[in-house]
Length: 539
Image (cartoon, rainbow, N blue to C red):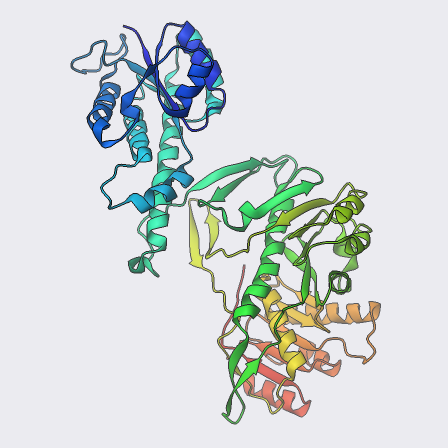
């Protein structure tokens, strides 16, 4: 019996080596599409397989090909297949495609009565897997080398056949998952519905130099057809990427995007005075501002908002200069030569920005430890996932900073304090809880997170703000303008100390049994308090 091989690929890497071996070993090769064109150009004999052209006139032939695959049986097999003859001899099928791209191309065709090419490919792959003991199903070029080794010895291991079948089913599963995501994401019946089965398709993007530790391996997988903000990252200069670099880069860019996304949509918030008077709090538009944030191990260790890159960068450094080493710096504006000449002095591991001028790239290349990454897509992840041993927890992402402001104190914050509280809450929202952030002149002067209690976190942020003041004394003698909290807090000694040292506004969730005591203390010290009613617990 002459063995037949089907070669029909989108990714034709290494296909010639496989085809040459099969041809010289006496196999009959059947192909179509771009793979057939490559075989023809390289003088490898093959026959056109019309079943692979899934136009309506070839639907019958496509069905016959699937039947041939199912009926193929090795001579040594004792499986009770009927009608075994020279027609049912498809012993190798090599087919691949990008399941995420294909899924989003298929969706518009649903309901139009036109069969999709990819749907036939997945049908063919599924049936190859059904008959994996007899049919080798290749869907990844990296497996061709081992396939050739085992074919040359004429002893293909069952475990290898199972491995290929499992990998093929993973490809089909990704296609089905992406199809489901594409359909449900735009379906009104699926809003706020949790599916009975969680399926998410991710495509391998790249292998990293190493994982969180040098003895660990790490791989980036990209979700969906466009991959979100991750697909917009491009390393243009510097050393290899590691787990920490990618994690910090993604987190830092998320901070930049979150600030502008929140304060663009949140130009105003409904507010209510202590006497019940309703009014609207306006926020200053961010047009013409530059946001710079410094991140280390997915923790914010500095942030600044100003009218230009250099000033914003200097504000970012004012909080924790010691943490610049191996940290990631993210900026909302293009890095030019002037700002690069300031940044190159520090041992950043990465700088991420929308772009870099040629002068900036030249200057920053003087520090070989700095990687440059451009980002051109906003971070808009709709869910957060916590991986568990044997499962995961998925929750939707709450994007709004607050729905309303209740001002229970006699003092109302002025425009500067309102803007700084919105800025500080953007940072507190993404910090690990309990999170407290002190802001002075649109720069972080104190931040505390990952604490086991609110009291410890407040004590820590008070200490941090005082340390920053010692290093950078202010003309007005005030350590911080505002205190921003991701949950409710109560009146305690660290808060009293910060008020004594100049804090003029506090924004928190509210709802503590001792709120009135806190309000009275603020009134006695002319401090404005804001209750939002919204927590931003993050862990």
